[in-house]
Length: 197
Image (cartoon, rainbow, N blue to C red; front, top):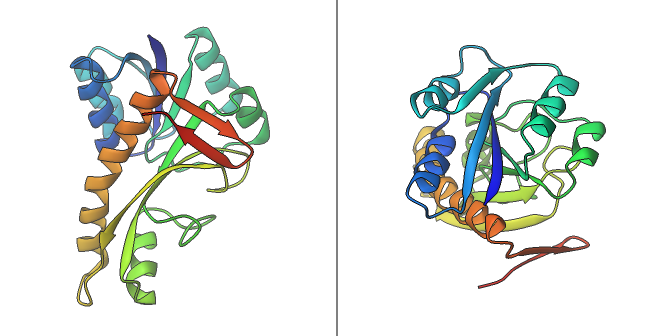
């Protein structure tokens, strides 16, 4: 069983999906700690509601120590609005995953988060958008892509409507990736990621 840490900055709906899947046994893992850089994040409350250690912390070195002391195998960024430095990404190379609300490499990188991503997609007039789960490196949204899924973008969709559609597939693909990771079914070769059936 893998030890999981989830880093959140906000409401934590993706966190809730992972909590539910670990509690039902769908994911062979245990969330040891939830860390937020926002002391008012509802994600911390979600953790407490499930008797998971909840930590408010902004200092990267302190977060690394917290993860090491809990012997974390997988770090999940679920709406964590802070770019991690090279010290962090090196310490947990190919052990940090992030879910991003677009089809990387579109609408990603510095400044693209939350509703801004969906507004950019709507303004551009794309016909499909989606979500991406990827490994995290020292740059924003540039790590190897693990899994993607798409949604149709209608001509009159608002950013809010698109966000709602994408969030549904975020939950699905993030859960699937965490499940595969905890079952040792993910292999990284260069930029290519292989997932065993």
